[in-house]
Image (cartoon, rainbow, N blue to C red):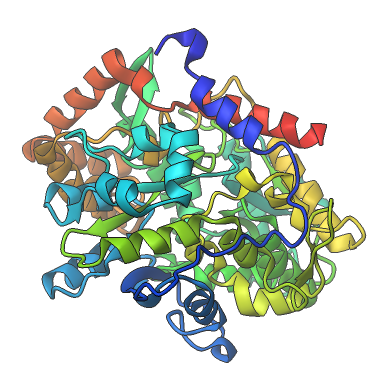
Length: 551
């Protein structure tokens, strides 16, 4: 692929596909099954532990019932913990209870299953049984290229996404003003602001009961990204791809300083899903909070509205990532070409699986997950985007898992109506404010900067099986997010980040990690044109924004 055409397959498919809005009710007909026997399959679904009690369970709710009533096959959903999906899937495979269709984001999880021969190729079932997904592959062959394994066989189903900054850093602007502080532009300034938020009573209740910054789950991952690292912890330096030891040591030192000075929740590490940090933020007890910010309506309903209900005076600003001792970076972006589904090698009914994938890839499925039921949650009129008529009802019945059920849907291929901000109304002050924050987060992007790593982690190339095993085994010890050596450095007095780095490098090299480093370095030097890089994602982002603004 030469420089002049490296974006062609991506930009054309994304720009042309989003040229207009859906019309009518957006409901595509389900292919007639005639007298054919209705198949039955099992499908994994992430359990995030947030299903409202009123809605049942993650595997039995209004969405699962609609899928079984409207879809072409019977589906039994198998819950898998979002935060421990690898362990959960391994347990299911060991018990021979793994789902027929596995919906999973993490490439290291899927690639390991493929290497273990637990996943089957899918090209045959697509050719024999598919209509919807076959057409998608025909129009956008990049899905086939990205979903193909090292052995040349197609293993993964995928989708096309709106690509935008995936993360947001939210800071209490009213606290800054009260304490006479400015928006931090460096991590030294971020530390000082967080320290002031923790020590100078910004909520005015006369107590020292606030946290400066959150550091568990997504907030911790975003701190890593501020310092330029994300799985699998490789960074570009002087044109080479190298292991980001400098970056991991630097972010560990920053975290340790926050922890030792009591600026963060001292029990942050036990907050595995970030739920406690979220509640502290929503209750007005945390000044700086970092979270996913790629679905504006979710931020509105799950964060902004509850925050203002609890703390009406709260005023949020969204800030760019600050300069760090190892450079400045943009937030990571949503993966534009994302592989999300694989098929169990022991699945018995490929036709039923393919019928479900076609249904889950259709506009009808996607529209229902995004807008709810026509006449109940939303209404449609010819020539205009669907209008959400009962946002709170949609939030209760759909918001907690609709994105996970829709992991095979490619929303923007149905037109501008499915870009994130189109769901929000300018007539509502809170919705308008979230749209403004969302726009500000996009305007904060500096195209002269890199994101953490050379591309989205899901686009990183897969090393050979034996090297992938080293990476998988060692990430739990030396990985930037939850490597136990780095966690020990944060939590343990007297154990310095410098010593942790020495121990991490020694453990990595003892396990054969240098071979992994050499493989990634060589790939980047000779074959990087084979993958989607950050610069490609920037171009797609710019093209999508231009398309939205033109319609």
